[in-house]
Length: 146
Image (tube, rainbow, N blue to C red):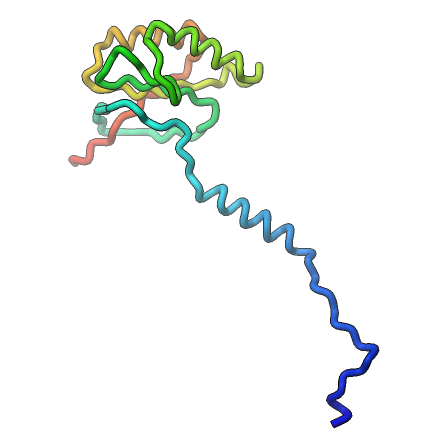
């Protein structure tokens, strides 16, 4: 029985936490990759055009969303409603909030109802051109009939 007794001078070794930061950053990286965030809620009724071919947008930073629904009196600029005539002023104020180096990289995402008149689309494109936003992507729905 004496050989199973603990001696008074033995200590329990401490827990090695050297790999703990690596584990935490690996978990953080995993959740950042698998999480998708919707930054701009769609608050207008849209019936998007249908297309046969689509291309997914790779770079998702520095985006401005402009949505035109069935009600043409107001358009959605990011997450708020504005009048079409106020679009150039909102674009300029949005650009001035960005760092100087990122202002040329701004991309506009247009979500426009398929029944919208081309004169409205032309006014939006003129406003974008006047603000120096030269990269424009149109949001569409892929045709499921094939």
